[in-house]
Amino acid sequence: MNKIKTLQKLIKLTGDRARLDAKANEIYIVYKTREGQIVKEFNDGSVIPVSDQDSPHA
Image 1 (cartoon, rainbow, N blue to C red):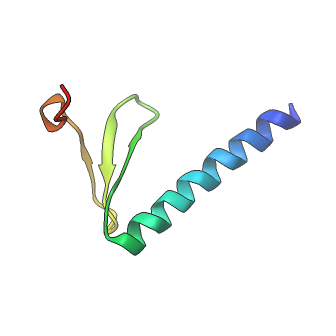
Image 2 (image 1 turned 90 degrees about the vertical axis):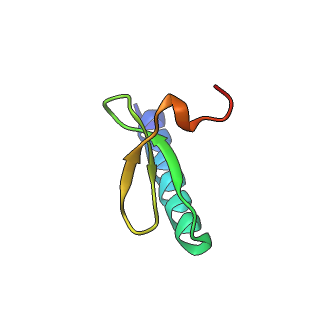
């Protein structure tokens, strides 16, 4: 049980670090929400969903 909590903490810290790096470099981060939707979060706090058309590799 303790390993799971440690892993959850590391995942949260990684996400926090990604947000800090995105803000410092004026870029966005991409992640999957709890509902399963992929979104882009910009350093101003705006969040937009990513559609299949946004992907150049589709």
